[in-house]
Image 1 (cartoon, rainbow, N blue to C red):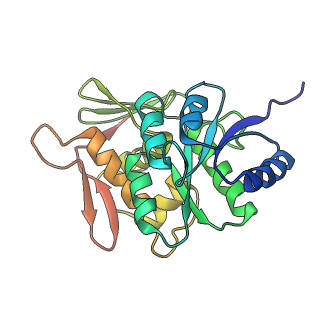
Image 2 (cartoon, rainbow, N blue to C red; image 1 turned 90 degrees about the horizontal axis):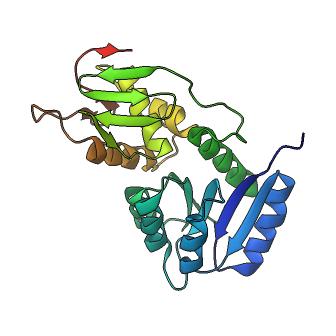
Length: 239
């Protein structure tokens, strides 16, 4: 039986670059469709036909941030932002809106493939090398994580987390009360090493904080130890 290739949507107005990426990624086993403006990107991303989006920031019609906002209103489809090298503002804004990761231009094609594979593994894609977690619940106080379908509930209400945010929270909850360094959390949740000046894991933790709110007593669920890392604060862990 022939394996179905992972379908990737590439949203970039550089037509020549798109053709090069389509050719390279097809060799790596991916089926890539390219569109060249923001509105077409939103429409294609919400079609349900793709497993991942490669999204440039600078686009006609709608810029990459506007496209990402539209996608996140409807779906948690994994998105890898392509940003200008050295533009930290673009990276931070993209992560705040809900990008799973970012890659600065110009980038090496092998690094792009590595990031794609890492995101697909986090999303539990059938085409990724690792399988998703199966069965089981994690619970700390009024927070519940369903490991089978990657759903999060706070006091019975579902919180909409991306696949990356789910893994960040899962890592913290599994070690509730124990400090996890930024390096270890990046390796666990993003499946890569922490690079110098890399703020990705901090932005993902910030997004998780916003989505799961504070504890019923008003205390924070996730605490920061400046210069060291993070830990989940509430109660004892149970399964």
